[in-house]
Length: 549
Image (cartoon, rainbow, N blue to C red; front, side, top):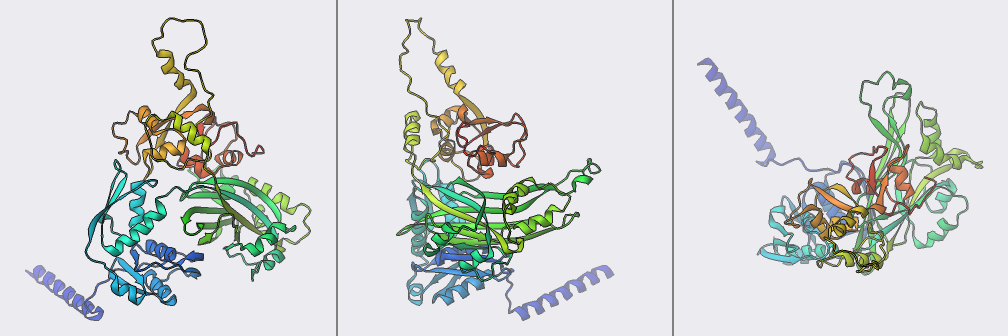
């Protein structure tokens, strides 16, 4: 009886506390407002893209009551509440923000907000041409909740339950995403420059280690190109697909345990740290009056400051608007003075040693008077007509006309006469013809990733969808599952056998591609490869770009 009485008293006490809480908060219980996880840098970016990026980070949706062409440059500090930040940015640009509900904001002028029709939802079906329905559905989740979006692989269309205002925003996104987009070629150069060179470009504090990114305007492009004081450490070209995430890494991977202690740690699994400069990035092509590029970038520098492995780190999250051919300069990359500090540690740093060896040769400047920058210059590649013609001859059923990679995995095979010029032979059973393709291709397993379609995978490997259907005996090509394994009949010219001391990084440099592309083509989770392992290359194995690797 006593225990029951005490339990009742406890419940009453909790109810009193809850009542006091409601009185203080006015009866509202609100979820914790999302905040920015890191400093965000926007350089010459469309205001609508900034709002969408912030809304995606905060996990809510944003609509625009009217289109507006405004560009902005801003730095937003980490820890700020995202919803309030969007409202402040809108107000600073003469716009108002109105919340339809807790998950959807509408931005516009007083007049456009007053006439915006956010009710009268109806079903709309939109046909797609180039983009996959799954990817388009993910993009539209910045406008609509997912339960109002349905997609159809077979008909290659997407259905939405939307109001007139939502449809205006949906059409703008579909027009932006559902189009043929060019292959992006990116010229990458790591350069050691003097602080005077950075001052000449207008950078106020060139000695700062803080990472920043600057689009080089046309009036300064000649200054950058003609400067004789800069020392190029490494340069190469990479091929990117639109909206594909890529990684550049200029550094070394070292064990978390110093090398002299590795013997005593033999029984334990040692982790690794990437020391140097890492740049994760993606380009998005935007079709407006002129083709533009949106560069989303996350760069970081990792350092080892002592034998007990206390890494120092600095990073940058940025979004930059660029024109094709315009250069973006990333400052704050690992510099020579920092490498020299790490060189005294008990770790081997072979790549950084070779990178900065040339930097020190014949250079009388103090290391404190130099900085390391990375130049990224994107441009468009033309559609490869040969690839399209070659693949068109192999297809047995029509496919949507899509942009093909400039480098195809399908080798150029000379025409073979239908009737061989040989003396009459007994009638063949057809076995020889069936066996012939097996000698020219290698079946490679490929793990299907999220949002991928059969046609997209076929384009990636430069084969036809019909080849994939036949090789995998697919009854319903429109329904392939994420995580399932497909067999890809890859031409032997694009198969490479790993040799001693070779790494993904070396192979990527040798063939003018990236580690990310090699990992994607070969469904690799990590960077480790073994001698004798067969890898798929994005170019024929004979087409070596950088033989020094």
